[in-house]
Structure formats: structure tokens, C-alpha cells
Length: 264
Image (cartoon, rainbow, N blue to C red; front, top):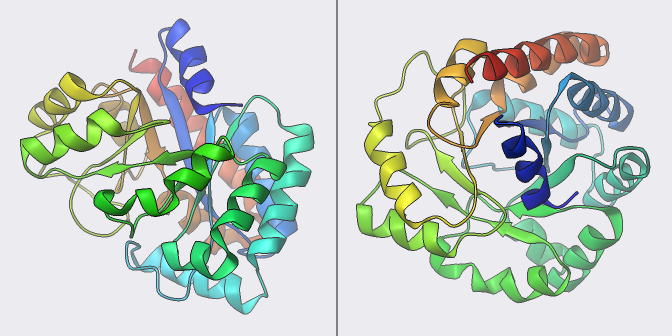
């Protein structure tokens, strides 16, 4: 499902979107598929499908270790596309977004990459190491294949935030605090100011991520924007329970969904 339609569905009900992240291939493709099914069942609207990378500079320890574990198990980009294609045949009402590093796209071949995104049902991509000024490197191919190139915006100068917000597509990924991913016990960003600047310029939904560790934080952050992104906390559950993780992932995702809905 197109990202704009996913957000529109929630907005019509006066609700916020829940976006969850997973490292593909951690404990194998079958475990990843079961965990994605569990998240969808629990009420996740968009699944961020993380492509493991040998040097994930935007990631904290939890996702780095899961990426190494996945790569050691033989995960490949082609394998991930095959997995997504299989899931897409049964999951129609959830958006799939691939999160990966620019070098992975280049090595694979930009045209070939976006062609497979379109063929397998990937609705958008997030490339955390691609500066906004360089987004045109892949924009033409992404647009030609109907894939949203999702921009990240951090709490920086008002002018830069406004520039990125104006030109973003799909949804605007608002980074809660500067640094790497990972759960945080508290945030130092002035969210009222940050989202005030964003909302003056953005023509698309905005979602906040990086550091949201559980239901209470998800509920609190949902007050500021149109969606909440949770990643490391889920990856940590998978690292702990391995092949037995889907039920735990379902329970945690359901607790996030319930908390966000309660916050409305």
C-alpha cells in the first residue's frame, strides 16, 4: 500500500501510524517473516525492512550486532527481495519501506535495485547516510519506479529543517535526537520547537524515530506528529528470543499500538 494511503487511513480515524523496524535475516528469513506478520497482526502500519550492512554508521550497538549476525547467516539483498515479494502476496494493507545504506544500492545497481523494489512491493526507501543535497543521485530511478525516497531531518537550523520538509516525499522521518539509533531513557530535543518548524513547511505526514524504547515514550511522542517509529527495542527482543521471538514481538508491538491509540 502506498505510504500516503497508509497515513490517510489512520488520519481518517483520528489515529497515528505505527512504524516498526526489523533487521532482515536476523535468525533467518523465516523468523523475519514471522516477526513481520506478528507486527502487522498487532497493528503496525509500516514495516521498515532493514538491510544488514557491515558498517552501519547510523546504528547503535543493538542493530549493529543484529546486522553482523544476519550477514554471518548468509543474508543477501536478493534474498531480502524474495522474502518481501512472498510477504507482499499475503500482506496488502501495510506499507513496506527498505532501510539501507547508499553503497548497497550502488553495488547492486541503482536501476536494478529500484526495479526490484517495484516488482516486489517495496513502497519507499530510507538511506540514512545519504545527505539531503545528494538525494538526486537516486531520485530519478526511485520516481520512475514509483518508490518514495524518504528524507530524514534532525534538530538542526530552522532553515535546513524547512528546506528538507518542503521537498520530502512519502513521510518525513524526524530524528528525535542527533546520534545513532538505540533506546533512550530521556530526550533533550525541544520537540515543540522542532515540530513547529517542520509543520510550517511539510506537505506530507511526519513520523518520529530514534530512541523510542516503549509504550509510554511512543504515546508521548505521538502527540507531536503523525506517526511513531520503533526499531532498536524490537531488534533487542529478537536478539534475546531468536526463533521464539514472534510472540514476544507481537505483544510488544500491540502494547505500542494500544498506547498510541490511548494517547488520542
